[in-house]
Image 1 (tube, one colour):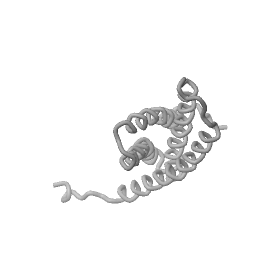
Image 2: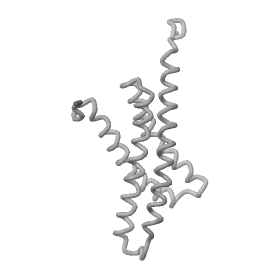
Image 3: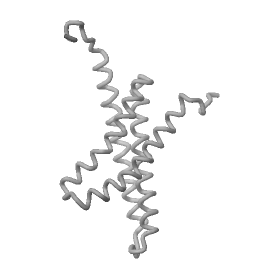
Image 4: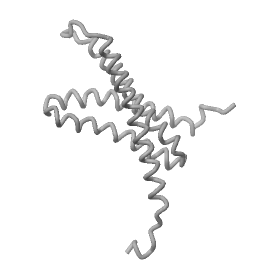
Length: 147
């Protein structure tokens, strides 16, 4: 039986923690952005989700060389981020005295919707990162090109 607590497998826990930290941070990024940006510009705020997943995907493809591991790592970051975002959101709504009532059904529906988006988006980012890495790593820079 493999030892899942060794250092090489701890990276998966780190990926989850990166996703959780980003999910909570994104709650505040989005809340702040809503005060200063119009709706079309808020779409660009969603683009920040590419940053942690692509960095993790790049690290994973360099470390493992596996396209599947890269896809799973990127998806894991996004899924952990979505879960953390909605858990944090629910906690904030519960603690907010001004909110009279909110629907747990709406929160669960939104979380499920964005969970599916995270699964698809994370897989796409992981796949593209792994493919790009493979293509770029095959290119060799000749001494003539360095000058």
